[in-house]
Length: 228
Ligand code: FES
Image (cartoon, rainbow, N blue to C red; front, top):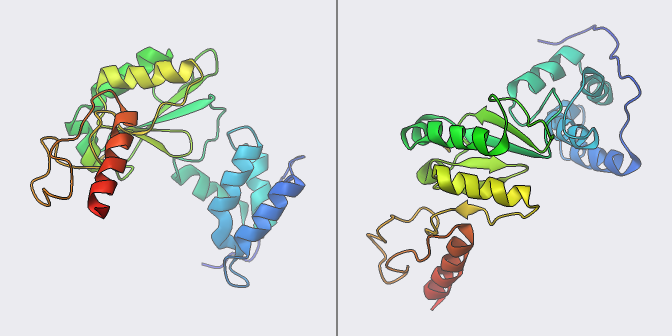
């Protein structure tokens, strides 16, 4: 449906920085002439970062103005995607997947561990010190290594247990960035007991159980084997 008229966007005082304006133009240029609305998620994400991690109505309407879209169309996008926040969030946003595979593999316990370790009282809330926000999301596409959560812009922590979930959070509290990936050290989504096919190509059993760093080491070893 083509919208022919709408209220003028109320953009407040928000505007892209010159650097972000450059980026915004680059995103828009990826789409055909007249289809600049296709860049709406890119621009919202960019605006969210510039605004300290969340979108206010004014910021959303600035993006609407920038893309010549009806503000309601942009608000609809914001309300649909879990990567876009309309309330202030903590320094680390933990997105706990609670869809079928993760739920069957213990996402309820992972959620509890996240809330306890961060001091966040409810899903969607933030800790009093402003360091953590814990939210519930639908499938993040890592079902074969369920249960899992995502931290920030795309660090996936997989094969979690309540203990390993707490370990990741404690490391974040210390200002560290624990290695993402399988937290049991398995190679990608390899069978936990080792490969059932291509046995000459991959290690018989993923080594290391102390977290993603071990998984990374296995990965390079496997890659080396494959090359050899
Ligand atoms: S169900 Fe959790 S990543 Fe797919």
